[in-house]
Length: 113
Image (cartoon, rainbow, N blue to C red; front, side, top):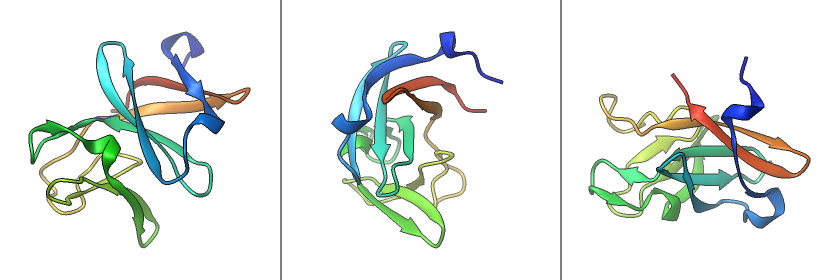
C-alpha cells in the first residue's frame, strides 16, 4: 500500500494531452508523464539510456499488442509504460514510477520495484 504523502502533485489531468508526454521534476528526478487515449497515466524516467539524452517525454506513444509503450524519439527503442522495460532489449529499462489521479490532480510517487 502506498501513502499519499509519498506522492508529488505535478499537474491537473486535463493539462496532459492524450498520447503526448510532459516532464516534471519529482524528488530531484526528471520524470516523463504520459496520458494515453484511455486516460491511463504513466510516469517513466526521462533519460534515454540508448541515446544518453533526456528525451523520453518527446517519444511516440503506441501499443504493441496489449502493451502501452513510448518509443524514444532518437533511436526508437520502445519502453513499456507500465514497467519501464525496453521491449527491444530485455537487458535495458528506465525507471517507472507510481502514479495516481486524485480529484483531477496527477500525483507521481515512488519508483516501482
